Amino acid sequence: MKNITSTILLSLSITGGVFTSCDIDRFPNNYMSTDQVADNQEVLFDNMLNGMYAQLKTWSDPMHRLGEYAGDNMMIRGASTDAFYEFITYSRTPDNYRLQSFWDYGYKAIAQASNIIDMAKDTDDPEIKSKLGECYYVRGMMYFYLCRAFGRPYYQAPDKNLGVPIVNGTPSEDEIGNLSLPDRSTVKETYQQAIDDLRTAEKMITTPFKNADYASKEAAQAMLSRVYLYMSGTYTEPNTVYADSARYYANLVIESPQFRLVSREDYMKSARTAPENYPEAIFVIKRLAADFPGYDYYYGIGGMYSNIGGMGWGEMYASAKYIELLDETKRNDWRKGDEGITDARAKFIEPQYSVDDNGNYTEVLRFITPNAAGTGYTYVQLRVNEDRTECWTVDENKKPKDKYPISLYTGRTTEEEYYTINYNGATYTGVIDYQMALNNGYPMFYITKCSREDNLESQLHSPIISRLDEMYLNRAEAYVKLGNLENARIDVNEIRTRAINDEAAYDASTFSANAAELVDKERQLELAYQAERSYDVFRNGGTLTRQYPGPHPIDDVLATDYRVTYYIPQTAINSYPNGSTLTQNPTSDEGVILQ
Image 1: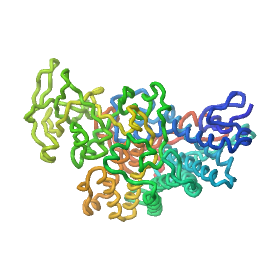
Image 2: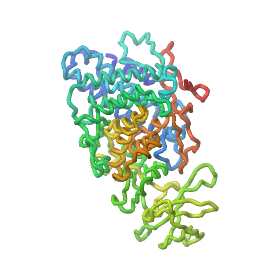
Image 3: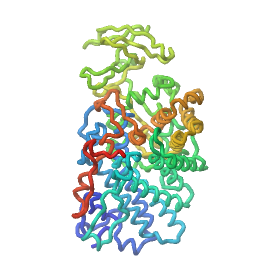
Image 4: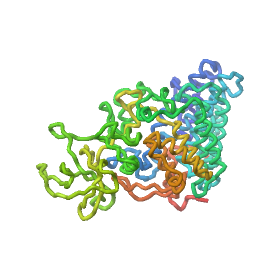
């Protein structure tokens, strides 16, 4: 019996499991033995490549949850025993199976990519060399994603803070018995590994772009743009060398004939469009309906955000903060269908309106107040009369009880129907809307950006890694850090006017006064529910503020907080070979190195 060399990392600390040559009689579909690889390289090469991509499917689920749940675009209806709740509450622990899955499958992809590279690195075949470039892309991308989760933001002493172990390939069978593994490399070293791999991918991939299912030269350039952006410092202390590199690579992708920004109408359909048919898609983790047999759609990314086709828990909703951003230019009135959508990004939010016994909607004034315990916020929905002069609560028999006068809020247009109310001794502003269905007291603002791919009424979704819209925003941020505010304004307006209209464009005076804030805001609006938000806040030295309804802690999280980084999974630490060390992240602010 032979050791399965492409799964040897399972026996290392990287993945935390142990297999020996006598444990396994058959090879899994995505793995091969040393002899198989040596004897059938041409036949098995594509199978190994497909196996590498297959690792990304499992990896992409915790990847999304780590990045998005720790941000401020969503809220959860209540406390959960699921391991992902720690991402929301910042109650970091090393014993978290979702965190372990992110680590394990990230390193499995690295191992598979490295093994393919080692197997065929001396080839002269141009087609094989191009496919090797795909392996370099996946490996570089994995190191970046792992480092941004487990390593400190780059502007904080990258040559001192720890990133992740750099382990390229699996050891030979002779080396297993006396194995020694390196501790975590620094953040700087890990980023350099990612850059080296991605730049190698850019050079080696010569096959023309096919679709976003596969790594491409443009995918490598897009990822390089993001990596350099993460290295570009903060707005107040930018690293202009790295900012210019981020600009350079974003520009290459923007100028590529392979991609184009779609119309507002087509953008609003993007969640329903298969990525191979979407001109902005650069690289995605392609999922198929066949990947979700039975009730598996409940457990996909979209399953927490909505219930589609009878599948999904629908327990996480768009945050009040994100809805307020969508409504900033003009209120999005979902009662009117697409005609009421002001910001195209609001198309990915679907309020769940309730009806009475006769199938009719009930008009209410909805507003937010501090909760009774003073530890957070809550939604209030009060019925409103046709004249828009008063609201009231109802008793157990649905009869009017306490009444409250309301008046038109002068800070918005009349048609937007914003009103003020004096409620329990304080004045609040809310909107007239249909009464919404509640889950644990919270209105259900479904998020559908991660559902209905290929026009299926299901939770099918291919997680987005890179799209063209991000490149414009990467370049805009880089321009701000380079002091070129006019070009930054042009790029932001390119995305903003597509989503809203030409009147929403920023003029030079408005933009120059708040350039950093406006770039970040557009980035939050555009990239919501793509696992970017929490990292975007902290890499620029920002503060995560979640002053909106939900069971999450409302205390601000600073970029200097030790909880910004996730703990290394304890299973990985426990499984490290004797004599090797895998260092854990700081468990308090005292251990954080800032400079």
